Image: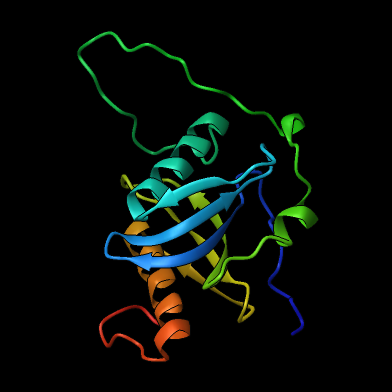
Length: 158
């Protein structure tokens, strides 16, 4: 394998290590440059919330829409800066999941969703996604391909 697509490429790059596929979506661990331990997730919703938390802390990519509230909001967010990076890209790229490993690079947060690129490390394939839903479906399709060697007909394909 040539590993031409194996790079983080952005301060908000995340490595998703998928260990299982449950009814609620992929389950596993995610890694980013700002902590050395894994962030565990059990389903697509937890994975998305953890990633959104990171992007909000980095304020990158800047969200196209902001949350609204009529009540006072307490700001207890953690903010990371480029100099707070703890884990090097090489260490991030050495992490692997049981069913699949994906490098996610969110380039935009527009229309209340994410747009970016995802690399399936085991296949060294990169594809763009236009929404969070599409990103999750790409991950699920890849993991299903590995675990059952059958592709869902209506799911996005690599």
